[in-house]
Length: 335
Image (tube, rainbow, N blue to C red; front, side):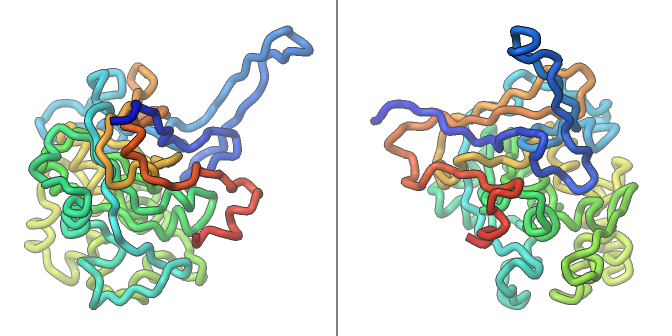
């Protein structure tokens, strides 16, 4: 065995960090400088769900599935986001104009939507059985962390999880799910699509709303997975209740961030925008360390995520180089 080493799995934070479509820009200012005050002290104002961060149950729901009030950040166990981990290599195509053409007749399940079939395939290639995941941190490497930028490619057209993946994680009693993309759910399951109180239904690169782009590409039946009212129109109320009923009974909008709510409502916490040198631990087991700020009544918090792993187990890949923020990332997003 080699020596234990630490691998950073966190995107660097700055005022220019990419952020979710309607989040505020971080404001960073100096209270003192070396030349003027003899010390450097800075103040930061930003949404806590910026960059690599943790979600607490209160972020998305009023009540967890045990009937109790959803917990805030300070109410979570100190090791809620820390423990034995595995990084699953989830092989699924993104969608939209920046991605290779996806034939919906040949893909597994719904295009760009991570399901149990993708997770079990990744488990098999990692040499772990789903039954072994109980109590573990599951990190998902979809490759999206390499596209982290203020871009449609990262935010609009990422693959992501949904109701079936959420049920799979709950079934296998994982401790925490850490994603390398914009959220614990597919973009169309969020307010970027036709869900949520804001229901932005953002315009895609074609000028059509993302919901229409997806429907044009894969058909209305595939799109219905992300839209409560379309699902009921096409498949009927009984079919909707069978798939999303547990969320609806808890007072939740079924197609609005269903993976978030299934995880957090069952006490499984989440980490979003995992990054850094994630490729160095892809397919590997390691010890995952992640500690959000002990924020009283917080809905989530930025965190430093780190893997502790045997040096001999590291994948032989180059150190991560960040090129967003006007330094050339847009010229090589597809690599």
